Length: 118
Image 1 (cartoon, one colour):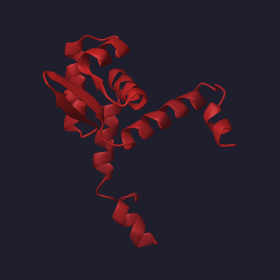
Image 2: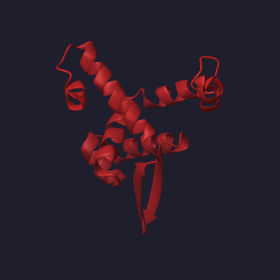
Image 3: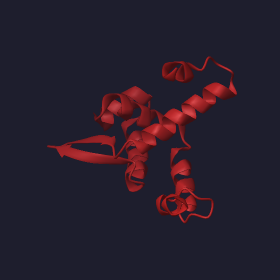
Image 4: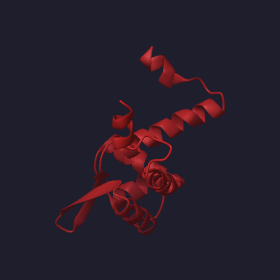
């Protein structure tokens, strides 16, 4: 069983620890968190639509999306001249969801996420 844990990288001396820190650094930006949340909810959006949702300029959102794409957090699909973005997988969405839930704990708000599983 211990061997299985080390294979998937969930161990304090894992080589994936530094990469995990890079993922946290990538998500340590409010605009990027809002982008992840918007894509989580909608599935797939264009830069302009995301810019409207997160209340930033398309140029700023495009720069954030480029970083998220380099980190393999988002993927693209081109349709004609338009590019649509989606989350690469569920992991970034889960990280952001967990962070929001942890934030609820830090300010003592009702823990709706605990009630849903009860």
